[in-house]
Length: 381
Ligand code: ADP
Ligand code: GN1
Ligand code: MG
Image (cartoon, rainbow, N blue to C red; front, side):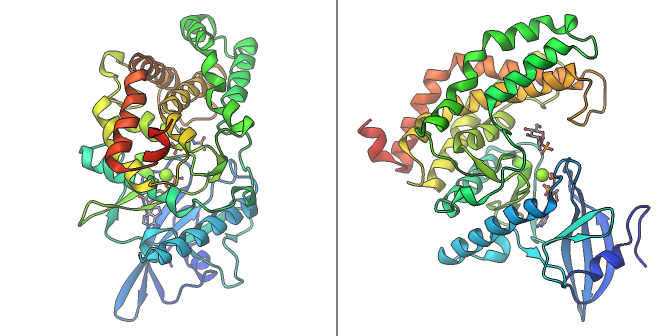
């Protein structure tokens, strides 16, 4: 019988449409949200892998709605991949259902789901070579293309206002006001900095509200470690970790990849002299992204990609600072002041990007010419 301290895997797996004998189960990957395991099942001569996840139901309190969203998006993706002549078993997540036809199993205290395992592919935590970053951009751009005709209003907004920077700012001000852990005085400089840059809050949200930028299905966690790169070819094959798919703006998704991937240092680097915006990686990502989205992007979205990168980085820093003020209750921390360090790295990146903002916009135009993405609309703008 295969068990660990917490879970009886034989019993869990028996509820899913998986034939064969469970041979092994090990923790897998470095995700921060769910508990992920790779299971091995013997089927005759061969052994087959699956991904088993215990869903974080403290964050995602309505698992029915969560799996409704993922079910719709994966099904749509699969059909699009098939239409493009790709391999749907490898280029999107595939849910393995329970014997009752459900997308998850509840054992009385925990929720579990199973995905088909994408073999011979890896997720990376940092940009090792610019080529990996290019390939991740191609994968996220392809995600936009595959879902371009998806009606985002079918999705539940599971984490309301997740990327509503104005609401995040109001939350921040409330945390400053409350100062529940007496940390306000120590970070007066950072608080002033956030307030001085508050005009950034509406730069994307206002355009979404006015309809200038469309709501689409967005991923909302477009970090490098949520793309699988093929071990043999290095190509980006699938975007994974669909827990936060919700209606939103493509500019935030693009921006979050830039925020995370174009930093010279880790998100929580305490030494700010090591943290700077790597412009060449921004260009690299843009090339891959625009090549893959083709004309599935509007002129307004294109124009707002650079500000999207700045606003999401500002928002993320503000969320870290809010959590620091509230006593580190949201983001997992492993040492004191980690959230403060995280906030500071984000603010440094915002300052770097603001200095080169005009150049960032020019690069979008230049890359459009090369890739042909929306060339007409940019040229006639
Ligand atoms: P979290 O939300 O905790 O970040 P993820 O869904 O991103 O969890 O999964 C964690 C890790 O498990 C991923 O980084 C990846 O390495 C691996 N993984 C997830 N889904 C698959 C899959 N279908 N095939 C192969 N590996 C996967
Ligand atoms: C969280 O768990 P992880 O690291 O994938 C957060 C993101 C932040 C990110 C910052 C559901 O993502 O919004 O950008 O940390 N996810 C959630 O590293 O809040
Ligand atoms: Mg992940």
